[in-house]
Structure formats: structure tokens, C-alpha cells
Image (cartoon, rainbow, N blue to C red):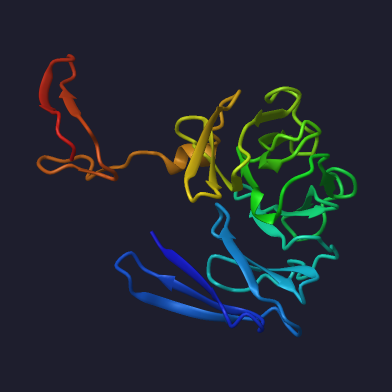
Length: 283
């Protein structure tokens, strides 16, 4: 029930501020952070299921840098600050929230490239080739490439590609935890949607409730196109299940009963199965 807000400094400086806000909107604490000497604008931030916060940036537009803070807001100095890896396009960072490993998504020679780091921030050499996977799909521009990590060890990547047929496609590919293309997904690991010649960017979402993948594209005529894909296996991890648990309180009760989210219908039965109360309205 806490809110963490991470703000960067001016684009040409290094570091930023972390604000901790309580549920009624009051700032409880704030902490300044810095990536050290050199220009390192803030890129993104995320937290894992243990309450650790990770802040990502780009050092001198050449190297990825990261900071890790524990749930008390103290920096973990054992977490590697800089990764020796260069890119073609400005990278995006993705945190595996279940174990604290992270991914850097960019490109090499116009092909999607993923680098994986361990929970300590060092390159995970067990992933792909020495920590790097490059997929053999030519894609159209930086804004057309997105990634997501789910179920603790699965990676979904989407983008816009122009195959040899000349017709631009939205593609989805799934990787296993070691960076191998998962052949059980789509056709040999790949699923595509053709005839999207006016699409200029694409976004990605995975629903832990419905087990569906959604790609949302912005077209050149400012219309939006969405595609939905089935996921061939269940995606609810233990952490996902915990996140979607309905809370009922107080328990026990003799009068009022509260729910942690809106319900569309309520039925109460006694121990024999006889219905003693029913409410069909949203509450």
C-alpha cells in the first residue's frame, strides 16, 4: 500500500530522487541518488516482489547503469553499477520481478538484441551466447520493439518486421529462460499478423487473468489497432496469484463486511447450502 515515485534530474545530469508516498498521498520520505561521474539520464525504474527498487539509466549514451535499493531505501552497493555493453538503439530495461534479474532490449544491425543480467547486476552468461540473444528478424525502428517477462522465466517479444515478402508484419516470439526460442509457441516460436503497412509503433501487454497477449499499434493516420493472441499455457505464477487474491475483512464479522475490490454479485449461504442473502448490484 505504498507508492514509489522515481524522478530524474535534467536530461543532461546524473541521478534523481525517490519519493515514498503513503496511501493518502502524503510524502513520507525522499532520497537523492546519483549514477556517479558522467552523464546518466534516468531511463526507468521498477521493483521486485521482495520490495527492492531498481533504477536504470544510460551512462554517456554508451553503457547501461543500474542502482538497487532495498525496501528501507538503502542502496545495495554490491549490485554492479555499470554493464559493459553497447547498443544501436537506446535500450529499454525490463525487470524480472520474481527474482531480480533484468534484461536490456536494444538492437544490433537492425535485429532485436537482448542482454540478461543476474540479480547481482552482472551479465548472465548462461543466457544465449555469453548473456546475449540476437533474433534474426529485421524490424522497423526503435518504437516498434517491446518485451515482457512473465511467469518468472518466459520472455515475450513483439515488434514490426518486414520479411522477404515485403509485407510488414507484427510479430510475437517467445523465449525460454536460457534465451532459446520456444518452439511450442505459435509456429516454431513465432506468431505474426500481416497487412499492417500503416502501423508505426507497437505496445505489448499480457493479462494474468485471461491468459491473453495484447499488442496495441499506432497507425500513421492516428488510429489504433489491437491484436489479441492466445497463450498456449497457463501464465499465473505464485506471485500473480497472490496479487489477485480477494481480501475480505473484518473476519469474523457480525455486521459490516468489506472487499478489497469491486464485486458484481454476492451470494451468502449457510452451512447447509441454503442461500440467506443475495445482492446482484456492483458493490
